[in-house]
Length: 211
Image (tube, rainbow, N blue to C red; front, top):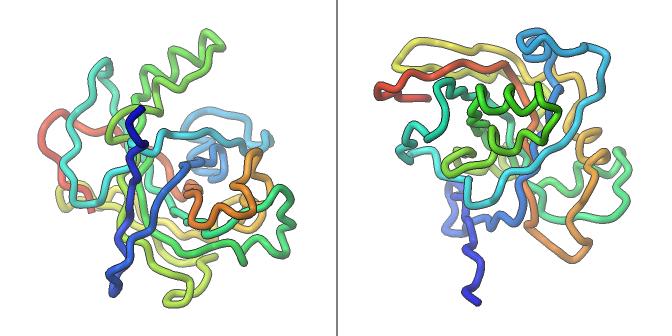
């Protein structure tokens, strides 16, 4: 059996790379996006996963995926965990964070909605090649913990999203404490969880430059 591919993220100012074992995503954690999708504002957030091979660095070219005519991006705060545990109280959750990055949750929205209407799992809309672009990882030692601050996204030079991390419904510590399947206690540098920061925007089939 061939060994599993290790996905690595760059760390600015360092020759070290951060190995990614799992990718957890948090749904329904931003009021604006809940309203965009017509979902219940009172419903709790939830988790889903993307395969780690879906992760690509921020300078990658992402092809328009197959099977969809409604390809969306959602900008995310990415939280990299250096350690885990079967029970993590929210008061200690930030002790497990290695650093932060900005990423995108790419979504085949029409496939996702079709599965939702049938009450089927909608993995096909979220889990595919190039579905998780991610920028460089900034260690907590350099930037501290991020609970507020502007998060912006432009497509072809046009600002599409301009928001603030403080508008998340659940903060990073609470989301880590709620994770349904946490990294094992000895599994350092184990996971990335992305906390939604703003809503989604469809992309055209023409070339798009996202910054």
